[in-house]
Length: 71
Image (tube, rainbow, N blue to C red; front, side, top):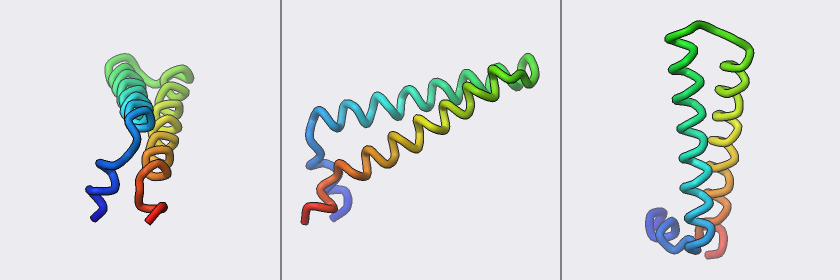
């Protein structure tokens, strides 16, 4: 039932959902990777926080645009 509602998400919302998740993963990968190689800096910390923020926004946006709530 849950997977059927996720499949019924509108195409535009689905693209935005994937884009937000991709941005989040890229920011987290860059932030954590640079932090491990070079060391902790304020900019790295801010990139990691931005990645987490985009991740939560993507999660809530994707969850809000499923058909679960319209049944």
